[in-house]
Image (cartoon, rainbow, N blue to C red; front, side):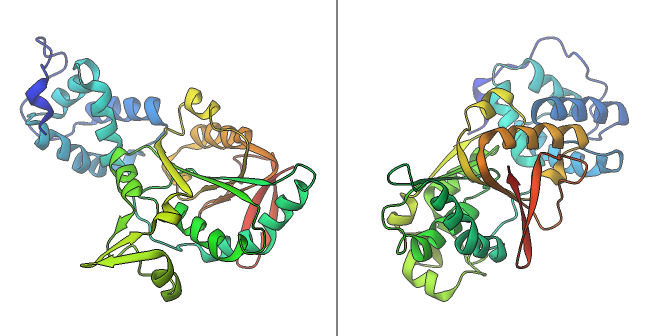
Amino acid sequence: MNLMSNAVLPKKNFSLKNNSQSLSNSTYEIFRKLIYENCGIYFQDNKKYLLESRLLKRLNFLGLNSFENYFDYLKYNINKEQEKKYLYEVITINETFFFRNQPQLNALVSKIIPDIIASKKNFGNPKLKIWSAASSSGEEAYSVAMTIKDLVKPKYPNLLVEIIGTDISQAVIDTAKSGIYREYSIRNTPTYYLKKFFTVNNNNFEIKQDIKDMVSFKILNLFDDKSMRAMTNFDIVFCANVLIYFDSNSKIKVISNIYNSLNKGGCLFIGYAETLHAVSKAFSIVSFPKTIGYKKE
C-alpha cells in the first residue's frame, strides 16, 4: 500500500533545497541526528553513501523527489510514526540463520540452564525466561527453543520456559511470527532438527507448532527507555550483532538497560566480534568452550 494515498505532505516545504536525489553533507547531518535520537544507531562520517542508498528506497516508494522532502515527511506528516518504522527497516541489516552460534547454545545446555535451575530449586517448578533482544526474523529464538525442547526438557520435564524475541523492524517480526523460512535460513540446521521441528513444503521450511508455541515476538526499540523498563526478570539474554550499530554512549545505555532486565546470576551473550570492554564493568566474564558470556553477579 502506498502511504501517499492517505497522507498529506505539509504545505510549507520546510527544508527543500532542490530536486536532486543526492544527499548533501548538511542533510546527512540532520538525518544522522534524527536516527540517533530515535533509535541510537550512529552513522559514522564515512557512511553517507550507505545511508543515501538506503533512504532512496523510501524516497522511491513514497514518490518524493529529494532527501529534504523525506526529512519533512518524517517530521511533519500524519503518518510520521509509521514511516519511522519503515526507516528503521531500511537502515538495519537483518542477516541471520538458524544455529548461527552453536557454542552459545552448547553453553546454554551444558552449564547455564542447569545452574539457573539449581538456583531456583526451592521455588517449586522452575521457570526459565529467555530474551532474544535482536531476534530479526526469529531464527535465533527458534534455535534456542529447539535446543531446549530436544536437550533440556527431557531432563527437566517440569521446567517452564518463556522465550521472547524482539526487533525494531515490523517486517522481520512478521516473518518470525509466521515461522516460514527459505533454504538460506536453514543452511546450518542439523538434519535431525529439520526432520523433527520443520514441515517442508515447496522449498518453504515452516517451524512446527510445538516450537512456535514456545516463542512470542514483538516490536521493541532497545534505545527506548520506557519500552526497556517493561523487559524484566530474564535469566538469559541474547543480543548479538547489535552493538556494532551504536556509538559508545548508545552502547552504554543499551547494555545498562539489559543489565537491569536480567535477574541476578543471569547471563548475556553478544556477537562474536563484539565486546563489553569499555562499555560495562557490571558483568563478570564467564568462559565456555569457543565462546564467552557475561554474568550479572
